[in-house]
Length: 337
Image (cartoon, rainbow, N blue to C red; front, side, top):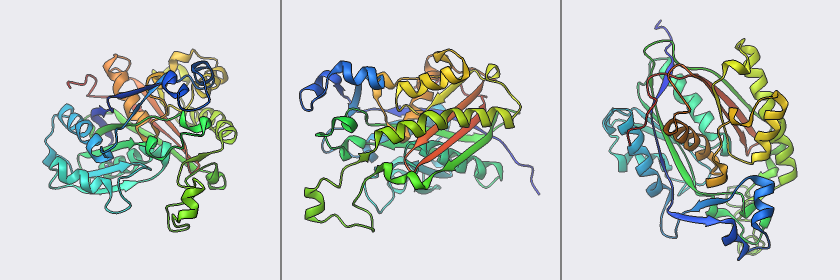
């Protein structure tokens, strides 16, 4: 039996729409203010995909960037896993369309849906394939165009989200670096707190349902906030305990970018400075599955992640789902492109 291998992140890339939507822009279309949004969420602006552009088209530059930063060619990629809850189609999977456009001629491809935790879930799958020696280079993409499914008459939800794509390549580690622990969980009883009521096989998109605006994302903000503020701390605490490490050993936590108040509550719980958590929510809002890889790429660009650093990636969101990935960083630290 082959010895299990660890997987490292060997390349990253991001892609964002050009259009910037500020809080002042939203003041013009819904009853809200810049102060109301910023004090409750930490968001100042977000990106919005234009009409006519697809998630696939937005994804291509991020993936090419990640593959190039990994020092690979498209044909070196063995598998593509796309984490998204806003795919271009129910069938075919966005990952399959991406495989064709990128020229990853040897790659299998599938989509994975775990909403805001999608990138951590997809990464856990990728790392198992590498651990067992089945594949060597796996492209994991987190991307969502949530503005396409927002009700812009609902100020409680439409101010929260932005569009974007983050891509990573996982490859075998050469030393003791790499992903060394995953924590995945779900609370299905809370599923209706983040939901698109129609569009699946349970309820067809009838004219009546669309007139009732049931094709838009519906969020129970109070319950989701309560879940998020508790679970982020619980996950970090469990990860530290079962790996016999302390928060002082952790160089940086890269969390899902949902609300700055969630991160502030976690910092207060652990009595640590807020900058222990990387955050860019002020620029992009909640980009769902893209938020962690997007934040991780920017943290690398800013020199916040260095060789040998212990990094925690922490996701939580629709499902309800949650997940943490612990990584000893190795190899790739400076995006070339």
